[in-house]
Image 1 (cartoon, one colour):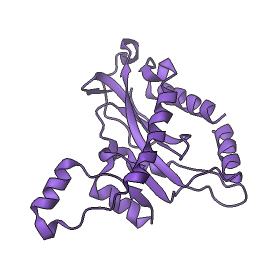
Image 2 (cartoon, helix red, strand yellow):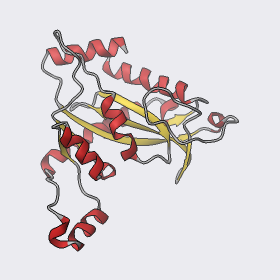
Image 3 (cartoon, rainbow, N blue to C red):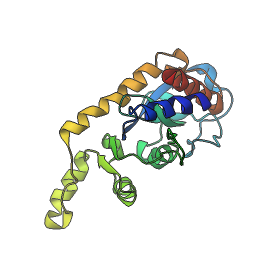
Image 4 (tube, rainbow, N blue to C red):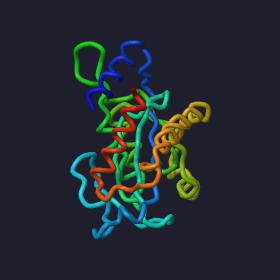
Length: 211
């Protein structure tokens, strides 16, 4: 990660290190060679210490999922690899805690953005509370069931969370980031037998995007 850290430091030094981060996930269908003889396992919740193949049975079959955060211009910052049946919200804290953007001068790397953009998969009380405790603003739309439950409770349901439609339009950068990553066939269709190998391939592709 040294080369990527150097590029991130240069981006900050020239004022291009935006403090609005976007987060989302995408699935990749597993090639039959990736299954090996190990059974699918539930995904790890941390960036390191992956165990098993990190494959999970989802609507698309046996798949892997990459959870990723990027900066405001679509450059990858951190990610986790899980089985395809893992909910996005379970990986939010792991991805955010893995972000380290070196500063141009002395001081610890920046790991706390000013604002986070996420889709409905990250709409939960736990995530909103996690962001509030750290003083991080967020733009995350409510799910339809959450809106119904809040309205059903009337005044006890509380106010709806603030949502800026104009700012939310900027979330497309993380989708474009994934589109660029999937230009590598080995990432779009997983061939690696182990989660470590697949994570290494995603790391290399991310490094090339920064380079």
